[in-house]
Amino acid sequence: MIKTESKKAPVFVEQGSVYCSAGNNVNSLWQALANGQQNLTALPCPAYDAWPWSQVFLVEEPGASELGVDRKILRTMEKQAKMALYGAALAVQQVETLANKSISSAKKGLYLALPTVDESVPPWSLLETLHEVSATPAQPIELSSSEFLQREIPAFFGLSTLNSNACAHISACFDLTGAMGAYSPFADAAFQALIDATGAVAQGENSVALVGGVSPKVNPQLLLQYEHWGWDKLPALIPAEGSSFVVLTANKNPDAVCVNGFARGFICNSAEALEAYQQLLAQALTNANITAADIDWFLPFATGSKDIQALFALGAKESLPILSSESCMGFSGAAGPLINLNLALHGLQQQKYLVNTPNNINAQENAGALRHVALSAAGPEGQYLVVILSREVI
Image (cartoon, rainbow, N blue to C red):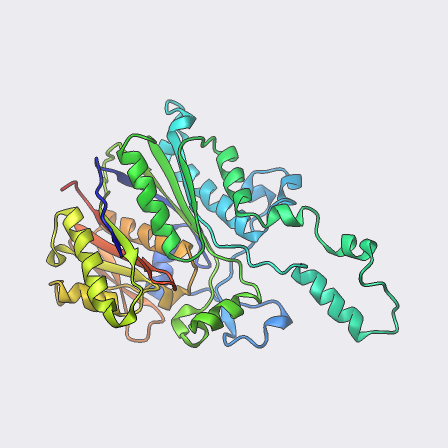
């Protein structure tokens, strides 16, 4: 199923934020990818010993000083919400448009791609305590007593695991009361948010929109999800944490890069996947008024290889550089496609690009004339989205 869409007016993308294991800005990430400085962090919990990965890409949990909020508020936030708020704060600091007081808060929108909160009920810390107590029967304790449960379950546990909690914190901190949207749970949610935000700005519903994505926090329950989809056997899908944001505006800036085309749909039949990929890519190219031969760089995320084959089948250049960033920096869920978007923005503005090396441990940096960059993202249920960025309005 393909959803036909078109934009009403040019919408420009301003550099936002990247928060990942390589650092908290796109420059540090670019250099890390180019130099192979992956900054892997070992898993801290013995309960993770059975995982197929000895190391994953973790980030430090932001504290009150980084987030600029009262410590009491942190009690209502778990790590995913903190990563999202920190990514939003970094974007607001770097993009003057979003902080422009002349734009009414009712014209500033927020579009977030958030993972579902895979938190144990009761929480993991309580399960660990129950395990320890059951292993030492000499210590009598009433495991079902309300006193025990109240002591072991963190305050505001139910509130802190709501995705709406992250949305509320971000909109309150940065005075965003315009049209909004929240999307979940996989990588495709990032471009769902981006496309809907583009439509809202193009149609005048918002003057500016903050678009963000955040990964799931690394926790033992991720393995159940990974095993269900077979991702635990794919070395490119090492779990990674992080968040990433961009800002959309109707105002052209000196380094203008616009969302020039997009398409989204569902690919339900794997036997016909290649043809479906071609149809969606062709729709995005038509929407951008360009051909596959005009694409100068391609950044797929969690899509496998069939969409790359589809783009070549549509006439892409044989020398087309491709960056599958998750093979270098892990799978960061909904944050990944927006990290790619920030890399694409950086490349378009600096006229350089990154391409995978044969070992997939790092990427090679090259200079080149870039006008059009295609990005794609996929979800495990068949969701597939394409976005095309261009240096000028076509």
